[in-house]
Image (cartoon, rainbow, N blue to C red; front, side, top):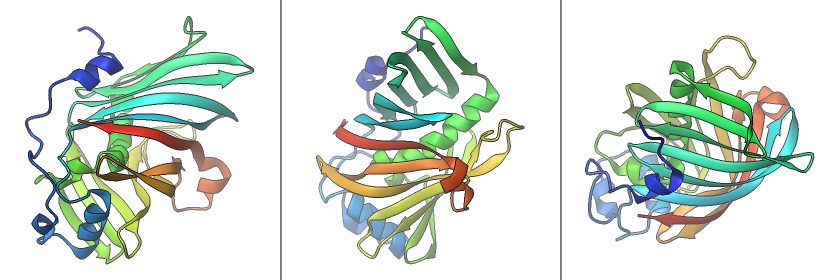
Length: 250
């Protein structure tokens, strides 16, 4: 099967399983109050419901030490995502992608774009990539308006979105303020942050800034990592800090 590029994923036809039309806050009435707050904050009334987003970002990623990166990402629900980045180590570029395409996760990274430094595929990589996709739905909140998303709340500031992607069911736990602005998102994600066996581990991100793009208000300054909600997040769990520069929807 031909490998799908980031541009090809972006140009793929819209997903017919997604709701069509525009966002209408009154349709949120059956949902818990905290979910209504979040979605009404994230999507402006009458905004077309998008099936894909294309992001440009920069930041730092922890690979033993903190390294700078620049990246572009396309998320297309339910097809998947491609994160294409260049990481700089000792001034040398390491280029590659993390992806989840049609239920198959993969990682491929090469020094100078030529010498392989990391390759990963298989069931564990796929299951972990699905968890990442669930968390990153905060960058494509229109998918959280789908009828197959089951909303609940821990309280009026903590909505939970439960849904299944590629046979993997997850509960995305959000924390919002009284205006609905998201403060964090987390879930149990399959992974091996300690280099041991693959269990489900707490994974999530803190949202420090936000910005609006074409009717969508997204977290634009994020800190992400394992052991979320525990002291280990700050000491050895956090590994990704990013600033979103732009977002385009279709």
